Length: 163
Image (cartoon, rainbow, N blue to C red):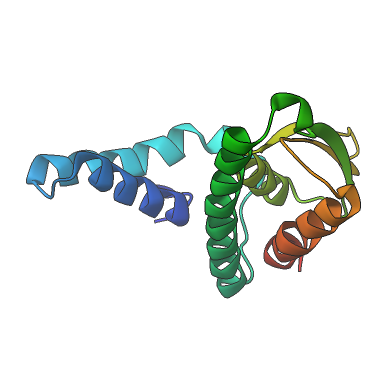
């Protein structure tokens, strides 16, 4: 089984996303979803940094909920700032966030969260993975932003991937 489906969570996600994108439960759609769910993980196995060992699925679900809520809140914040402030009054900047997280899968998830959250973008990571550079659309308190990243995202990711 592991030989044909090397990453069951990825296969399940691909299957579900394909069905949602096609908005159909016809036989051809189900068959193509199953083929994608099997083929893509097999073809991309060498691209993944390490075997994923998710240790605390409930923490992962909480993190997904938190990140989703933060993305919605951030989208509303960015829209409000764009509509109510002059460009010269928007305090965008690059912020260095010191990291304790070292797992490549955890870092990949953190990158996705940062890139999917409106108003933030993953800039670069230090070679030793000790510091993350994030571009932030508008931030008033750099220390509070760093503390938020560490508490909301880094700590749960460490629990999920490094515990």
